[in-house]
Length: 104
Image (cartoon, rainbow, N blue to C red; front, side, top):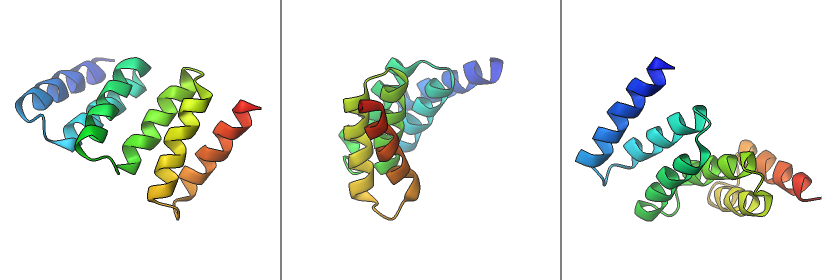
């Protein structure tokens, strides 16, 4: 857990110093996801999407967070966005299908 806290400290500072840096926001969101802090992770992924709306990785991770929060329709929207941007990516298609299954 200490490594997560160290990473959070680093990425929080990095995001403050370079708010336009997508990689910092995306990495911070991933750490928050691993820490199971899904609501805060979504905020990071939203920051990325404000800077780069076609960032499929951010759409996918946001979908993962929403799925964990049992917001299946919203998760599906994010997975569909990722899949539309990168239709060849099998992981995104699998996530679309998983979210659809949870809606049933």
